Length: 447
Image 1 (spheres, helix red, strand yellow):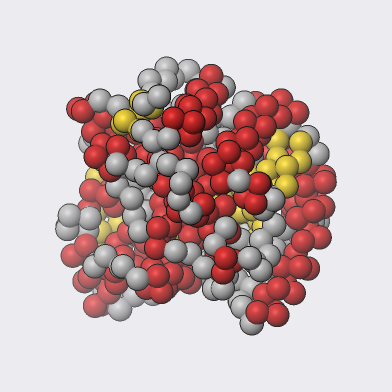
Image 2: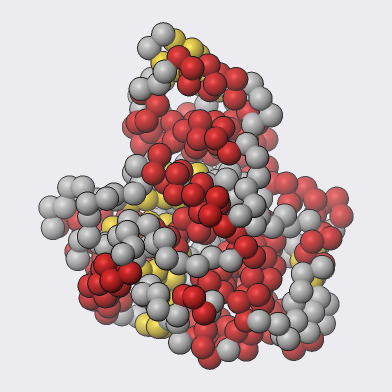
């Protein structure tokens, strides 16, 4: 089966030099990454979060870039049939494929060398969002970032849709990690709210990264897709584009996101920041949030807990608080001379920007001791949970664990005990893998 596609978006207007550079990229070492990301986009709706299962199932899939005088075309060889209706590719998937080309092959050529300083990394994040037209200049603050797990209960999923609906009724746009579960629910709910209010320029922005996109492919609601190089750039994109953040129930990935956010906000330079944060879920999730808040208070202190509100089983109140906070966000940005569309004043230290490779050695050597500055402890805890996410769903990490066994985490006994308790709760509640998959822990905690 061979399918030919014309370009969309920024790639429908390229110079011959740019076409030549794209062709070269498609035959480079980056090709495998590019191919796998396109396959993930084509495989939307799959019921697995194991990347290797998707790669094995479609081992004969291929993608080719074809140079034309008018630009670039692509050829898909043996793509998943679910991406097509009556032989025509689904429009949203078509657009997402060219988002992959834009981000993996096109824009990344500008950043071949690793970036080491804060300004350069932030500029890269800004540049990728700008190139994807994800930064809207003449708009009031209205972007709500929603975080939460890909494996959640049915009641939790329905709750995320209800919150999204209430946000949509109030004219707020949604940004998520673009996958299933708590990433899909708010977007799906917001579509109804926007439709009722006859809002036509609605935004459902999905931010992903290459190593997780196969496990969490863009859900069908996403109408803007940006693929950042790694989890750290992805997290920075979330917090700089957000005007408010709503956090639903989740697993290790949601804990990672919360720890990243709190570690940044605990920096003294961010004391004045106006970034509303709400943790919310249905009444069935009350114990989940209780355990998560207890862990945050034990590790990062009451000051960290004061950075967010917890609202249980009240979607309308969540949306009302988010909507009313937009005035404060706008006033803060105006007062500081900052942009509405990108939070430049947010201080993000090197510990939160540099990419952490979850090797066995790096995971074992993490400094998980309480006697260190709170923001540094948050950075190390974030790395620990990031490694667990990688071991659960990312192909390269899964291969390492199959070869060398689980990651070993060690540190202060009281901290390790608290972390073990939280992770055990995630496992028991089915938050580490999609339902129907047996979970074998990718980590061991030394108690």
